[in-house]
Structure formats: structure tokens, C-alpha cells
Length: 508
Image 1 (cartoon, rainbow, N blue to C red):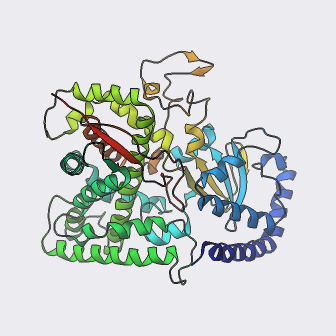
Image 2 (cartoon, one colour; image 1 turned 45 degrees about the vertical axis):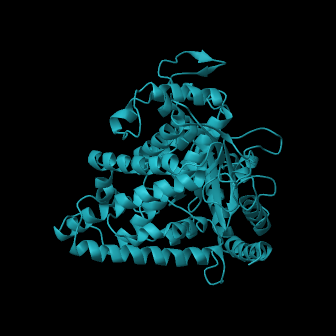
Image 3 (cartoon, rainbow, N blue to C red; image 1 turned 180 degrees about the vertical axis):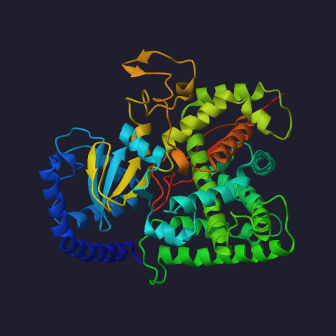
């Protein structure tokens, strides 16, 4: 289907939906605002909106069309958000209100204490919410889209064995083995080009699948289907239109869950103690209170693959780009890595990774600058206050992590790649910005509070191992400096896949 046809269909759908919402809710909104005024609140208590707000369906139509256009451009959908932080008078703001797909969205910078507390405290009147298309593709039982606090806690407990120390150590060994084979044994010729995104996706997918479902699983052959699901997570919800990205994503999900269902049957008959699926099946057979159903297992194995593979591979590509742009930092990392005294195709362990102090800071700085998950959405279950702004029931609050990570009041020179900003001994102030404070140096890469990403340590392990194997064997620079982002991607990544020119290092 041509992109312009899909856009026209979307705009018609949004206009119809917005008009209906405007008619059905106008009386309730007026009564709410009248009540607020009687209690002393005024319109200034509401998050500021852009020009044209209040024009009903036309404003919602325009905002949605702009958001979709940015998502389909090489600038990425965050360009839509960034433009709205700047008011009509040119002044910047930490919060704004817009309307997308028939719903009011409030974007608020996580730099505001009241906004960050939304994630840290996880209040019951603010439920987690993701795009409906993402929820349909991941499944109703996915931990990522779970709105119930009690159900979310059950899923976290059930999946916790995956992140134990023995399991983490085994995963690190598996990832390192695959990275060594892909980057060293199958490396391109001198001055050859490596497509970093493809390599990172391949290595991480194999290691994650081995961790989740060991043995002869069909999942190993379905990496393309996982990618199709990811590409459809922010697509137009055209499930009945042949050829649409969302419909292709739904079909890919069916093939993936069918493969997982076969693995469940196989594991039930012959469990393997070393993978997550075997642990989950053994818990069910033992009558464990945290045992999961087949449907819960299917949805969450798919979720773990996507959350672990695609996001981390994307972060790795950004890390390599930043280091290509900063060869002096690349050299400093190389000196630290070679200083560990590890020779040959030695297997990396968690103990080795713990000694990579500067590399760990480079990973943190890469995660800050890339901000793979730009914001964390919550839906208001009742009227409430967030960061000093009045939020109405059913509004969606997006706690903006990227705004925090690029706030110069929090991170000095935020557009500069500088791993040393995480040095523990940096104290005092520089240009009025406090340094060395844990509060000021907070990162919101993996969320916060009870919904912090379960796999954050695995992501850091993958990035450290990939970086170590590359930096100790090659120097690299970008083969293509095009900064354009991939169109329609769920997570912001380079359109060119981050091609790098590798120059082998002579250790003799």
C-alpha cells in the first residue's frame, strides 16, 4: 500500500474519532474545568498546549498528521516532541499538551522531580500504557504492557530466575562466544566494512534464544519475524488491509508463538535445567504459586526477545558511532582493555567485565545519548496532579527521558560524548551545574521503581563484551556519515545500519 493512501486513511479515521470524542466529552470537560475554577484552580494549572489547541478535531487531526509525518521521515518521531517544548514566543518549557490518535497526551520532562516520582513510586492511579498496536503484537499477557500492579509483580517473580547470577554468567559466556565468532573469525578483510546493526542483531538474538529456549528450537530461524513484529509496533492499525505493516507483524507474531508452543510441548516431555522455559515448566508441574500459563509464557518469551535483542543491538550501533566520532576516547578504551592482560581468544567472564571501569562509563554515556526508549507512558485513572500540572482522567502522561538526558541543568554539555562525566570523584560546580551528585547524575534509560527493566544488566553485559572484542582487535570509523534515522522504526536507529570500516590492530 502506498504511504500516502495509508496517511489519508489514518487522517479520516482520526478526524472521525476526534469529532466523536469532542461531542461526547465536551460537556464533562466543561464541568470539570468549572469545578476546578470553583476550587481555585485556573487554566494555567493545565499543561500548556501548542497553537491551535482548543480547535477541536482539527487540532487533533493536525497533531496526529504531524506526528505520523515525522515518524515516516528521516528525523524520527521525537522531532515532533522536541519542537513542542519550544513555545510560540520562542521560550522553552518542561511540559506540553498535545492530542494524538484521539487521546490527549501530556509530555513532561523527567528532569522535574514530580515527573520522575511518577516512575519511582508507581502510584495506583497512573497505569502503564503503550500504544495499542504494540500491545496487540506483544500479547495481552506481556509484562511490558501489563497494567495491573499485582499481575506485573507476579510476572516479575516468575521471570526472575532468568536474571540470577548463574544464568547471567552463562549468558555472558554465550554472547562472548558468538561475538568472537562473528567479529573475529568471520571478520571482513582488512579495511572491510562491517554493518554493525546486522552483526549486533545476529549475536544478541542467538544468545537470547539460547537463554530462553535451549535445544533445537524453531525460534533460531525466526529472527526476521521478530524484526517484522518490532517494525509493526507503531504502524497504523490496519489489521484487515493486505500488505500493511501491522498485518505483516500480526502474521509474524503467529509464527513466533506457534514455534514457542512447540517448544513448550517439547520441554514438557524433556526439560532442560539451563533455560528459562524449562524452569517455568518445572514450576508449573510443582504447583508453584508463580507458575505461568502457556499463553503467558508465549507472550513473555516474545517480549523478552524483542526487549533484549532489538533495543540492545540499537544501543550498540549508537555506541560505535559515538566512538567513531571520538577516536581519542576509542584509544583510551583500547588502552584499558589491553591493560587487562588477556591474550588470544580468551573467554570473558563477569569478573573481567567488572574491571572495565572506563568502558562501563562509555556504555552509560552511550545509553544516555542514544536514549533508545524516549519516554515512559502512563494513563491517568482519575483526575490528579503531576509535576504541578492538572491532569484529567484518561489523559496519557509521557515521562520524557530524553528531555532529562539532554537537559544542560542536569548533564553539562549534553550533546558532547563524555564518559568521564560519570567519574565518581567529580565534585563541585562547573558553569553553575552541580557535578558528582547521584541525584543530578541519574539516568532514566531502563525506567525506575517497580517497573525498572529486568534485563538492564544483561544489556550492559552485551554492550561491554561487544565493545571489548571490537576495540582490542580493530580501529574503526564510519563508512557512511548519513545521520538520517530509519523510517517507521520503534526505536531510533540509523537508517544505514551503522556501517563501520575496520582496520585490524597488530599486537606484535
